[in-house]
Length: 331
View 1 (spheres, rainbow, N blue to C red):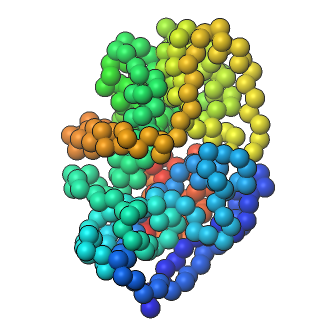
View 2 (view 1 turned 60 degrees about the vertical axis):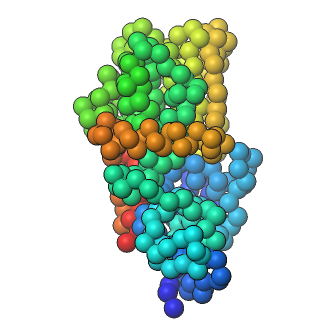
View 3 (view 1 turned 90 degrees about the horizontal axis):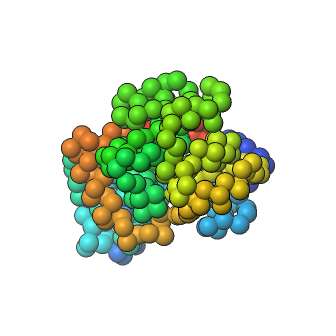
């Protein structure tokens, strides 16, 4: 029998998540039933949203049950099929979570048709993070040429795509990232006009210097003090796409110091969950894969090896230790 190593969520975090919240299990795979498909997962996506699902608190989705496989997107290959719609060798993406294999009736599988794009990219720039960036920028911020767009976590899987798409729309783009190396990457490799290192000092003043005409559109991934600094630099009738609040994922309150600016600057602020907008995915994915294949959309990956590395890699992601998209290689 084949062993399927998997990571289970076994306890709720009290404050920061720790390795003790996870457990490595190794059950045997059952025999396939009629109509089922067996997939060998090649890559696993690690994303900040997973931290919120570990909590037993009100959110946009129910908390993950204890003693179950951690949720997450995967890409892999069909290796056995008792379903006529799927053949061994088919490349697929699914939400199999933190495990080496997945069994499905086929309803939750999506074929990867475009061989111009590396398989792992379907978990990043050509996957949910990329579509998240595309939706928030195009449907909420709706940038116009000549405007200034800022994005936090600018070197990450979502932020890096936001900035590049905004540049293609003719905007001045200011990134916010942690550390000189990440800021250099954002400007020199991704083509942003400027980057503010939030670890280096006064973020408010640095943003004023980087965006002297103010900020017209802001893509929020972080929250907390960074959001406060951005608020003070927003122009009238600016638009904010609220994607993530990683600063508050451990349960600490993150009060705003200048909420009145949302009113006085007539700011449009909209939170969104990209899985509620499946109608745009085909359009977004085509635009993203075409741009990647043409070399017009760059991305970077941090790759850990083996399912056993997933918990520590995930905790590093929450602390900003990754560079670009955090992925676990499972083969």
